[in-house]
Figure 1 (cartoon, rainbow, N blue to C red):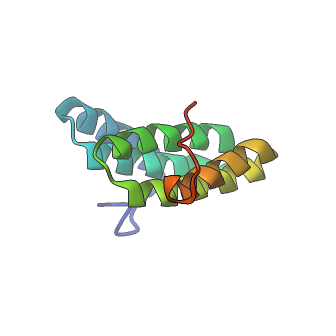
Figure 2 (tube, helix red, strand yellow):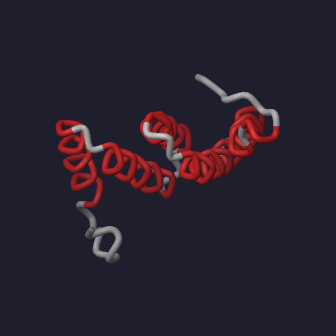
Figure 3 (tube, one colour):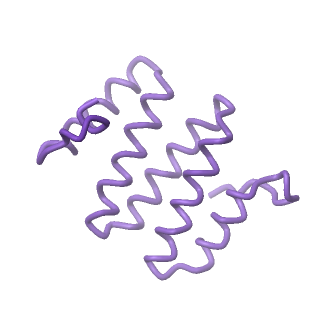
Amino acid sequence: MRIVLGHGGPDVAAYLETALTEFRAIGERWGISFALTELANLIAMHGEFAGACEYYEQAIAVVTEVGAIEDVVRMRSRQAQLYWLSGDGESSAAAMAEARGPRNGSPGRRR
């Protein structure tokens, strides 16, 4: 909630890591995906695009388990942007294809 309310502060990464650990302990998938996504956004702001993409990959796996496909589209689009910024055009294109999803005949991407 600190992040949602704009009160992250310098300790935000520690809060997110703690939240992620606790959400994983209780199996709370929405919380897991939120913490992973926020961690991805945080490290992306520091130029750590590959690490951010990995957090997104983990978040996508979690939301896919519960069928939240609309979240996958948003996450893959952001992931495509981060791959592009890191100079990996091939992974960027693959993430965009995944964002478009099976409704356009594109199979799911697995890493």
